[in-house]
Image (cartoon, rainbow, N blue to C red; front, side, top):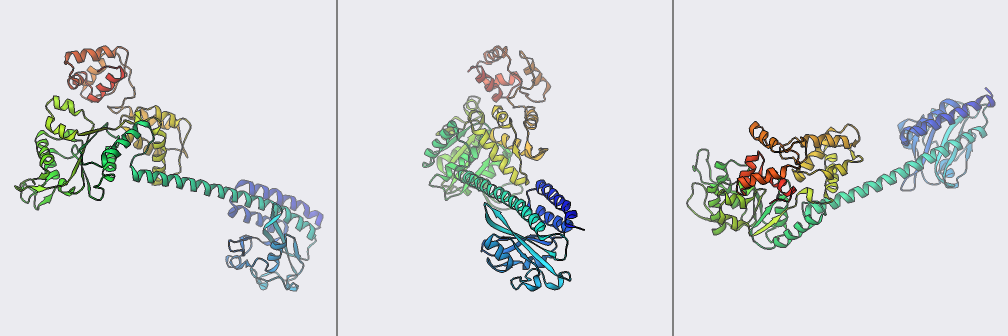
Length: 523
């Protein structure tokens, strides 16, 4: 075969190499494939790419035709051997006979593993901005019709393409590391903010609530946190505790609405052995456990009148009596309560003690609903996305239109509901991006929940209220039509302004009724 006949192989190598390098930017897969083309199509065997290490030494990073142990041996000092010479000078080096060249080290390849006859070695620099950044080298049999000049020309072009691949890969890696560093800084900032406050957001109403909570934290006054479910009342309570002089003491939380009434007293005040069936040992209650710290009573509006009396005694005397016991146990606690109910209305209805209300309502602190926190939804959504990406090992992003749709939703379940929506979106996403249509589908499901303020069923007059009450299936939230204000006014007049009774008559919850009244500016 003549050199002219071999020239089409050179074009074939370059064409195939371009295609290989264009398919991927990962040098671990593309560069060995190019070296394989050089070996199979033009007989340039045992190709290797030598690159500098951080310590200045040169090492074979990519190869074709070398065994792993041979590749591992290919480590050179900066000016050692043929490879070091090419790296230092930036010039091509051709060794006509490796057996006759003292500078050829046989470092990676032992002579017995090479074919018999005269074996040559060609090394060309990989240049970036005319500076050598690596070396492309290979063996060839000297006794070939193909001229060395043709091989050198082919290797120079190949080295240039490989150099560009390495440069692009380095830039991408640098960019990725920069983005990862930024993400880590953002995560750290969010974590620091979360540790400090436990609440994310920068809206004016939230800042006001945080500022007020910080101001009252230094006192021992009882704080009542008011707000809808899911607004972060427990996080605010923990923040107040953390900023108080009791921060080294315990923070004890009890949800008064989650524990059956007959068990709540023992849970709160403890019990003596034998006080009731199953009381096989004496047990301290939550109030004692909070001694020296803070006792947080969530959903205080769900506490029975009998237990309210005992709580009042705790607040007045700062002591507890365990169930079945007769001795007073002094406790040093600060009490923080929370409710989403209208306790003033509960007092008017005789369901909450007035004297206890005054004891608890020393410092009322209203927490804004999420729909009132302008600009906080995107920050919270990104935070939850990052959290659930990490939890479920995903790398999802939010598509176009998702954040505006989330901001436009009324969020009756507030932050807890937003968190649930993002988690569901992460779990059910079909691609790498959460699309607006997927969010819309989830929000449509959310709107079927009884308290959702998004309108899902058109209605006029009082028919939807009547149907909801008669069906006994709940209180679906209906569209507020233009005729509804008259219906609301009439119901309030019939009930002499009693909102609880009016809501019951209309088949609504008190919160749903209040939402409609606020919508139309009624009181």
